[in-house]
Length: 112
Image (cartoon, rainbow, N blue to C red):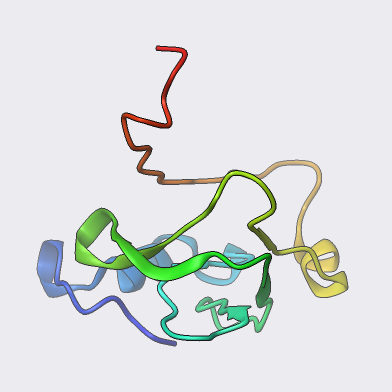
């Protein structure tokens, strides 16, 4: 697991806090903090449910939440394909949750 280097409460990193809250119920966790020419969006939950960058997003291009560098997607064909048979098998369809943090530039937010 690659913990986020910035400490949060109680001296734990953000990733460690998420892991301690959800334990074995955590299906997957992607920080999308890869650099260079990475093709995989690495799952840091320990479950190896890696995603795949599709298109050509600019990796480590934007200052994201908690001080990490995040990819910039062009809004046309860039995305992360996180689906896998392992993810489908590990996800409970009876209940679940999703947390997504996004930074949208004012020029892209045209409809108010």
